[in-house]
Length: 295
Length: 278
Image (cartoon, rainbow over all chains, first blue to last red):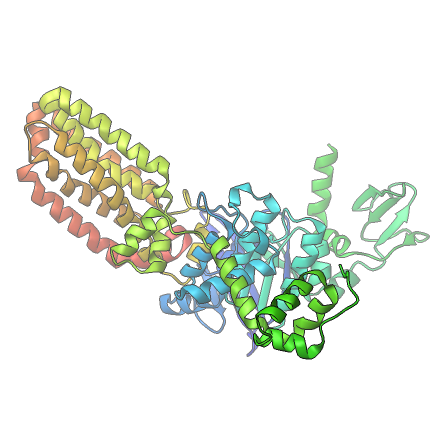
C-alpha cells in the first residue's frame, strides 16, 4: 500500500520481534483523521502496534511515519510527541496525587510551562472526562472507572493531532462509555484517533474504520459497514445449536444464536453485528477457543 | 420563593448594578433580591458575568490546585523553576517511606560503626554509597513508575527527567549520610570520603540505565560493589578494605564516575524508548 498524501500515520512492512517471537509481522497501514478501531484477540499485536504509534517502541524492521515525521530521528520524534496523546493499557499514578495534580504533572511533561494556562488546560480536560468536580480528590480514593478517566484526561491535554488509546473504555459503566464516545468522536473531526478495544459495540458506535489484527498481521482493514456486511447471511436463530456452526450460544430469549460460514437453507437469518463479523473473520481460532471453554 | 407582589423595575435594578442606588435604596433592593426569584432572574442579564467567573475560577483554583509540598517549595527557593519543582516532587523516591528507610539504614550503619571500631567504619562506608544507588533504582523506569509509558510519550526529555530525579535522591540521602558520617569516631576522613564511591556508583547506575532499567542497573552496581569489597577484605582483612575506601583509591572513583557520566551523556538518547533498542 502506498501512503496517501494526507495520511497522518503510515506503516510500511513494519515488523517487531521480541526474541524469536514476531509480535508484528510486515504490517502495511495508513491512517488519516477520524476514529479507527483496532480489534483482535489478546496477544494479537494490538498493544505493540499502539506503542509504535505512540513513539515509545521502535520497529525492528520496516518504516514508520507519524504526522509526516520520522520517529526514528530523535528531534522528529520529539516533534511527534508534541502533538501526541497516549493512554496505555495499564497505568499507575504517583502516590498521594490528586486527579488535578496528576494531570498537571503530565501537562508539565508536555511542555505546558505557564502555570495559569496549564491549570486552565487541566480543568478543561478533567471537564471533558467528567472529573472536574472530583479534581481535588486523591486518585487512590477514586473508583477504577474514575481513575481510568483521569488517565484518559492526560492523553487529551492540548488537543493532540494523534490520539492513541489502548482500551480506553475498560472499567467504565455504560453511561461513562457513552459520554466518552462523544469526546472521542468530536476529537476525530480534526485528529487521528486510534483505539484498541475488546468492546465491539464501541467500534460499531464510534469508528468509521476497523482494523482486525491477529497473529501480528492485519486480517481486516475497512469500514465498519463492510465488516458487518461480510457476515450477512451467516448469522441465524434456531431452537438448538446448529451442528457445524462456528459459534453458538443460547440467548436470553431461549433461542440459540448461530454464527457460521453457511446458514442452513431454512434458517431464520438475523442482522449480524460487528461481533458476529469479528468471530467469523477469526474463524478457526475463535472456534478453538470455544472448544477449549467447553472442554 | 416570591413573597411579595412588588418587583424592582428595570431602571432601579440597573442603578443597583451600577452601584448608584444610594445606601438606603440599595440595601432595600438587596434585601428584596434575596427573597425574589423573579427579580434575581431579571437582574442576571444586567450583571457582567466576567468578574463572577473570575471569582469562581480563583475559588476553584484554590480548592483544586494542590498546595506545593515542602520539597517543591524548597526547590523553588533554591532557584528551580516551578514546573521542574513539580516534576521533582513526583519522584517515587521522595515518598516518606524512602526517606525513612534511608535514615534507618544509615542509622543502623552508624550505630554499628560507633560500636565496632575500624570494622564498623568499614561497614558504614560500604553501606553509605548503596543508599543513593537504591534511590535511583526506585526513581524511574517501568518497574517503579506506573505512568512510565505516557511519560515516555511526552516531549519532555527522559534523560533530563531521570537526572532530575537522581538529583533529588542525592538531596535526600546525602545530608542523612553526612550526618551518619559525622557520628563516626576518630576518623574525620570517613565523614566525606564515602561521597566519591557514592557518586561513582550513582553515575554507573545512570550509565547502566541506558542499557536496561535503572532497577536492574542498580542491582548490578550494588552486587559489583559488594563483590569488590569482599574480594579486598578476604586476604588482609580491614586494612585492604580501608585502603579501598580511602586515600589511594579515591582518584579511581573519580575517574570511574567521570567515565560513567560520559557514557551516560553519549547514550542518554536511548532512554527515549522502551526496550532501549534505538
